[in-house]
Image 1 (spheres, rainbow, N blue to C red):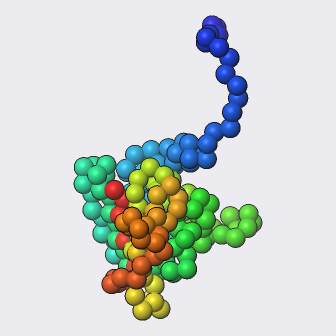
Image 2: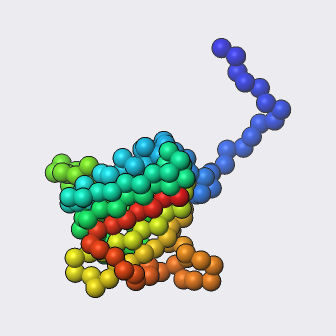
Image 3: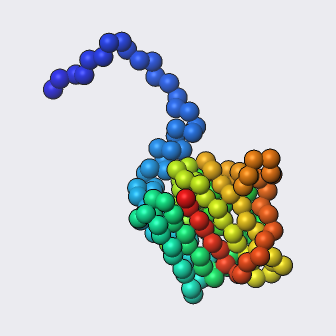
Length: 164
């Protein structure tokens, strides 16, 4: 079969971390329905008995999910969208007893590499909810000049994730 010809040979280079994460996001999140599936599984894994979904533009303009699950502790907000950060296992052997839909810690990280993510969450023992924004796997300020730290806010037990 024919070998493609190019004008010049290209050197092999390591891809930039941002490009790697965007490619990985495409492997996990193929379309808005894939993102919704991952977020629904997170809600179910959190013990939710009520889940509300809001979609605009087929999920391309807005994808929002709100549940009444266990919630996310404020201390964990910095890791929510980090690749391979999970509450569901600690070591490889834990995979033998996994009883949840998701466990790898890739879904929210992948979504945050292709869209803006805002998370509001409250645990049973927290005096208030907290809200944070994410882009490219990291906490980001809601507005220029603000800190990226999670902000206390009103809320109910559970988690709301808004992707836009």
